[in-house]
Length: 388
Image (cartoon, one colour):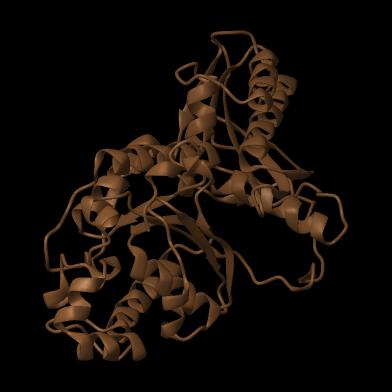
């Protein structure tokens, strides 16, 4: 009977594209013992390239161990798993070359590809990050040769992990961040008519163009990979957007009331001009102070308190992971204000398009890094459907 081997592979880029590395290991399927670990810094590349390189390296390592074995490759990249399984078409030229290289490592029919959640692929992720950290210190990655039983017990070996200063790049290593990818929902009828559309009023669903925008966002996020959890506002337009994305990622949608849009009270469904005509004094107060609330509504200060609650929960629970938060204009701008330590009033100076993506990394010491803001590159061809 053929020996059974499990390849666990991953890759990542700090910047996408940016400094990138892959990590892979081969495990005996019967005992759970780690037989070999490989990792390498590959220069500047995207997440997808790094993930493919990890699959290729893991397959090659398994081939070196036993070319007659049956192999299962486990990865948290749904894109790579589906493409190498032949269920998804490979369209990008660079990905075609990498897919061809991966499939050429082993004879057809002897390799099975399985998607796993990121928490079940931590060893490969660790190896990729070890290679990135070593490269940041100007060092090559060196194997720690960790050997684990199926129960997770580590078997002592003579080798030790690469050690070095925690000072990297421009400063100290801040540890693994929690990455929040903040996606605004797609367009609704209220978006095009520029009406106040918050919590507590009419709850519009996505328009046809909003559905197309959500689909484009889903395709982009699947291609980039690395999403571990999907959190959504309870409002219909956000839940519909989140459902489209999560369906493509193979994840469930979790609803969090704290990322719902601000409640605009009696202004719900009205245009700015209509509000200005009926409530001139209240509107002026609202524009001049984040402590002021629309009649029967919610102030931006109150919104900030609940967004901060959500932020604290996500950062505490998902260190080192990537969470997609599908929300609205005001909560996403509030996340950005918190990241930049800017006053809440700064949200009046931001522009956020439907189905746009904003990315913030939150480190263990509460330092945040704004990586992208209002990214709409995935909406090429749909730009005529964007209304602020």
